Length: 145
Image (cartoon, rainbow, N blue to C red; front, top):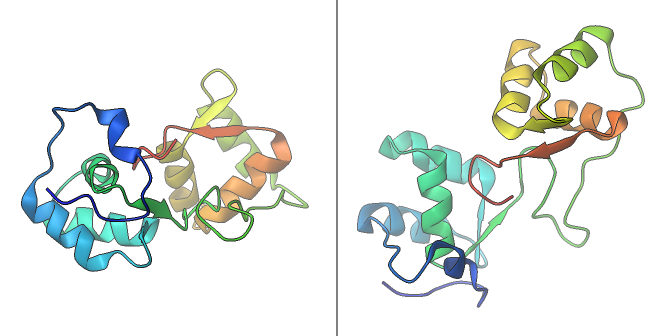
């Protein structure tokens, strides 16, 4: 498999024996822009191919491409990487939903997405509330963090 992309060493975290499905790799390579794959595009590829977001993230790593433009605003933006800012106000029901989903004072990315869907909010509104509450979002569905 070709090692395209930014020259990063993302593939190393998966071990020397890790392989990618050629169909998934081809879809990622076609969609990648400037050495990176935006989060929303990665999720579209996962849906289109009937694959998990984790498989798309792993294959992106194996191609040594960067994941970019996190839909939660947590990584992949230039020049500052992170664009989410703490929310000025948090509605009590949203605060309660976030607090109720915490595990060891952390919120999984999947739980944050679920909360956003339940409250019909943009994903970044949930991450902004987490920023204001001092809650760390963990376990990126694509494996970026």
